[in-house]
Image (tube, rainbow, N blue to C red; front, side):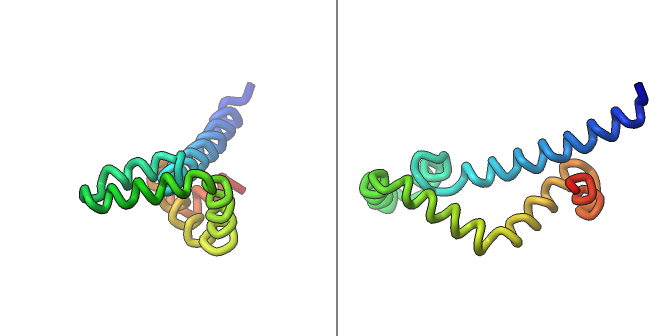
Length: 107
């Protein structure tokens, strides 16, 4: 078995794992119930704003899946290019590569 080919495959797989993990972490931070971002935002708000936010979240929870798909649509259609650039930059920093080198591993 060629160790160089194994290490190249490992590096490419690691690049994919890092990229997908960062995307999932950012997605989980969206302030939509039941994602963690809604709980974190609620904890960071002042008490009065937190009470209003919690009432709003109780009303939205019935429509959560529709809001969820609407936000996914907006993110994919409108924000994908800047989000992809930011995640690529962050992932390349974690991998210790330039964004161009990291992107070439994803191709």
